[in-house]
Image: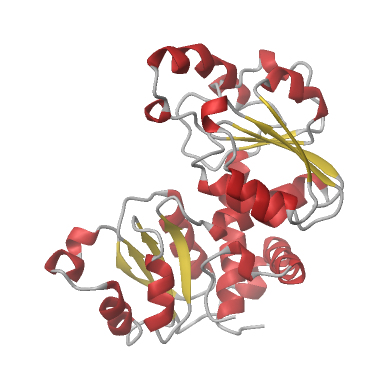
Amino acid sequence: MNGLIDIQQLSVSEIDELIGVAEDIIANPEKYSQKLKGKKIATLFYEPSTRTRLSFESAMLELGGSVIGFSDSDSSSASKGESVADTVRVISCFADIIAMRHPKEGAPLVADMYATVPVINAGDGGHYHPTQTLADLLTIKREKGRLTDMTVGLCGDLKFGRTVHSLLGAMSRYSGVDFILISPEELKIPESVKTDILDRRGSSYVETASLTEAMPKLDILYMTRIQRERFASEDDYQRLKDSYILTADKLKDAKEDMRILHPLPRVNEISVDVDSDPRACYFKQVLNGKFIRMALILKLLGVK
């Protein structure tokens, strides 16, 4: 594996291996603290990021490595018109591995074609965000003890949400996973995702507009933001928006061992009164993201 652009590049056994290494890092951090001494990661972020950029940088520092890069394309040669291909050719001279976020879909793939070091896609437009999916999978595994035999509800913007599509692509490969797709008609899962992922893999799924009806069945609830700008009608948005604001009251029919995930940032789709519920795991997801990125960097650099 040279770099990681799309979660589909990873086999189930490779995902399980990464999760295993991440769990070992959590249990034995001192064993890994100097694994990448003398190595450098370049974080090339062409658009704003808080969690993902700092997660990659923290991951590398905790492995004993160092960080170079930029957090704004205006402070890079991109502002002078330099191409992604030329940029990564140059950065490959300075760093051992690259993490790139770019607003244009496919830019990290181009980078991977021209770089002479591994490239990790840290998000490209509405396309892919594979390390977020790995963070999701590690969180589910740590909370539930498995990635098989469960009902996963995905709620909110299922049409444009890149994290939703990637998570479906990963979890549909595990046995016994049923999906409940919860969204307004306007933001239903694209037909291409149903055809290429769910139908092709024979996954069990149902579509509904009601979070309340789905709640008692769920082992995992994956919340996403309803985006006002996606609605053609303000009336439709006003009619539907409150259906997808998760409050403590709406959890009264949920299983005691259900877990709530969210890729963040949230706006108002999860009320702050849910934060203290033991089922809320979205801040744990952030921490797990650091550990799984540590495992991925080690794997891509060939360090045991």
